[in-house]
Image 1: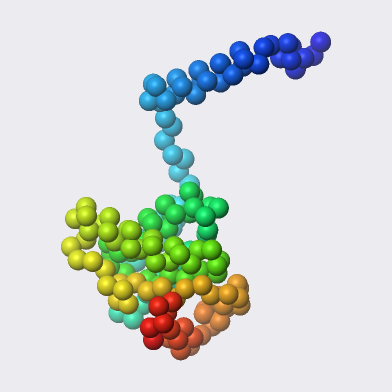
Image 2 (image 1 turned 30 degrees about the vertical axis):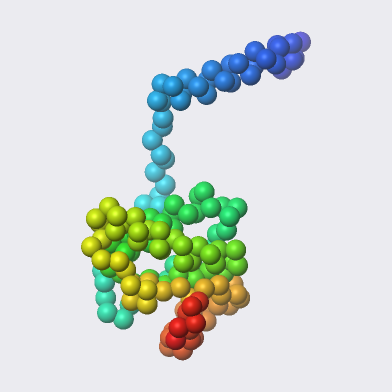
Length: 165
């Protein structure tokens, strides 16, 4: 009889009870592990921390996520937007994923409302000055290459998602 055959003879209800106990002890006892520090997240935070507002410069943020990865990507994008708003660094949101288009307006609005309610911002960020939404941009890497190689980004991005020039 090998090691695994011994477990075949255990009543499954006992296994379920053991799993339930293991999970509930953690919840009842308030045991939790600190989040693991991730090097890429720390690097992104350091980059944003070093940024300073500069006339004529802005940050491009691509929110390429949809409902399927909302739990992971929404908090990440909210934190980046929060830091930029607090540092008064203007940013432009866009997406290359069509299902993300709804988040391009809702995320900065929700972050702004939260910062205003907590007193971390004194005035509401003005659309078109603090941030803009240029919407869904098809083309994948072709769009990114044209953006990076453009001498005049404004002419490349003629109007925003709201139709404003």
